[in-house]
Each structure stands twice: as structure tokens, then as C-alpha cells.
Length: 230
Image (tube, helix red, strand yellow):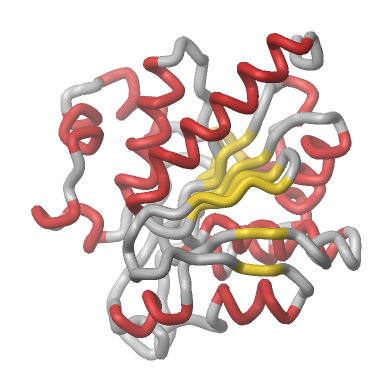
């Protein structure tokens, strides 16, 4: 799992970072399915956490489980540096959201190369909410990569409704569409929505994090059954 290291927002003193539930919900889906999960971030160490994701109304069951999980908390506090991660060592990669990826992972060449390495090796890539911003760096490495891709991501409507459309460098849905992707979203904002396009799985918002992880697990299981995945 690749996490953001960015905490600043534009035109405000408010902070961002990893949206905690978008990390913990998928993390425990993977753990409970028997996978070993390693964590990395652009800068390594403990990633910033979006304060809003720790408010009572946004706390999920997996958040509470995480608070009592010393192993997971230690892993979160000591993430690997992104440029030390090799696709050859893993079966899949998952990018949680929080607004941070709009700044760092969207512009990180190592992240873009890593995404392409996974896909070129026949290994799945999943991202949720603002995590799909990481795909922008893959597009930069391989122009045309996003053309025709069917994705989901945090919508322009949702960005406006959470009141942060003036605090981000661009609207993610608009940016992905400008790069040629078709962004599909739930009919009603903030409902879960996941899209699968080949080896690429994307989820729209925090409620989509767990379902996106389940879709990734199903894809990995299908690979294992067909003998593609080791």
C-alpha cells in the first residue's frame, strides 16, 4: 500500500494527509484474507493523517481496530520510502486517498514507474478516492496511458460538497477526464462505487475503499486460480 506524505492544503491552514479509513478498511480486508501487507509512502516514516478522518462521524470499525493493533500502528509509523519499492516483490499495489496524493503522488516519477511496472507485469493496481491521482504520474511516464481508461475517483460534486474545491490544485475528476479517462461515479454522491478496467481497480470515495480492496482480492484470487499469479 502506497500512502501520501503530503499534509498541506492551498488557501487554508487546514491539513490533509491519509484519509484513515481509506487505509484501514482495505488493510484489514487484505489481512483477513491472509495477505501480507507492507506500507510505503513518498517520504517514508509516519504519513500525515487527515484530521477530518479521525472525527467521530468518519470513524469506521477498522479505524477502531487499528487503534488497538500495535503491529499495524508500528508499520504505519515506519513506512518504507517509495523509491525503495519494486513491483517484482509484490502481487499488487493499493493507493488509499486523502487529498495528499493530488500533490505528491501525482507528481512522483517513482510512483508512476511503479504503477506501470505492476501493470506491465500482469499485476493489479488499485486506488481509491484521491488515490487515483497517482495515475497522473503514470500518464506522465507514458503519454496516452489514461486515454480510454474507465475509472472512478472522488467526484467534482463531492469535492464541492466537502468544501475543499478551493483548497486543491485541481479537481481530480476533471484532470483525469482531460487526460482521456472516462470517470464513472455513483448516481448519489458519497455512495460506494468501484470500477474495474482490466488490471486497474478504482474506487470513488471513502465508502468505496473496502469494496475496492475486495475487488482487488477477487482479481488476485482469479489470477491464482488461472495460474497467472504465483
